[in-house]
Length: 357
Ligand SMILES: [Zn+2]
Figure 1 (cartoon, rainbow, N blue to C red):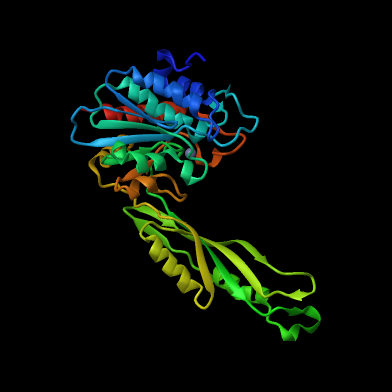
Figure 2 (cartoon, protein in one colour):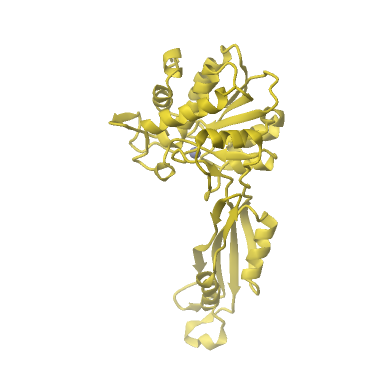
């Protein structure tokens, strides 16, 4: 295949977004796009390029006082009659336009266009963000080559519609269990109905007052919800077990251990097992490159409500923010699109920030 990422395409973030969208890269099928990205980075004289699996990174080594990471995932969710891209007015439609090839285009454009950025920059293009963690290129490189990711600040170019979203909330899943005694429903007084006992668990959830926490001016709104309920044996049996799956989204001032302690307090008296957890990330607005980035954007950040890979950077001690042109509400949507104006605006902002003397 001829590499579609020609010098003319690399010079224009809009054309570059489109070219990247038109290289199909559903998770675990990123080889072609990684090959194209690697090939263009290898020949840039001011960059040193590395590859691990289908994750490609390139770095400047100018001896600057700070280093920043610009990161984006190369994969997309499965196609949904939205490949290749199409243009309608100011909108570019297609799988990955919003999440997040427009963000990847920012990093790739800057990597090739800025020989002397104000910080040393690590441009990081990784595989398999949309699927389980064990395939995630950022996770894999953090295990295999943690030195590749050393930095003072990271910018994750996920869709935020041009707003700076700081940190992210943590998420915990747990199963609350009620137990009873099985009996024939014709003689139900011999049993204890575990499904009835689930009522109290649900009552606590309905009455629950979720916190709203403000950290560094960013509000994080928590939530605790039953997401699934399972119980029952047969149509004529008093059930002896009911499981209520609970998802707790918690503000990043709480550690996973504190979140678990809080869940145990809410469901005191019940058996509770944590099945999955991902820590949140504090906003991370104190690092000098973060402050300079916010000045370039010229608007206040807001708290990120979902979980993103900024938490992986936070776990490595690297403060990170989310900033990208796509609308996050359109990510994973068959009508996924990006506003071309937002691509131009965001690219100009990043240029202003990284090129400043
Ligand atoms: Zn994404």
